[in-house]
Image 1: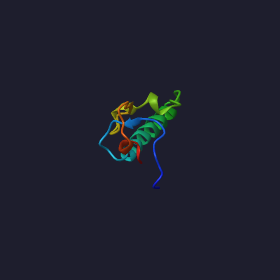
Image 2: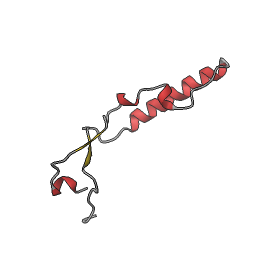
Image 3: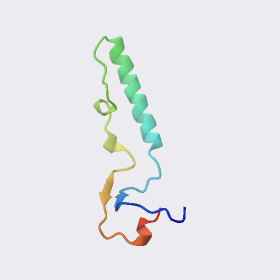
Length: 75
């Protein structure tokens, strides 16, 4: 991958490598709430955003970095 470079100057705001554990926790919570609501014969949520807050994860999002150097743009 010697020629692999970013096309845009968008970088993640994080020190975490992965969000795998957060995603597992969110999906488990979603399934638990959905099963409970179905048992109570209520409408179950259709999206995970209705049950959990995705901004609680290890990765906080992304931002545009205007002053990125060529070294920053390498993958």
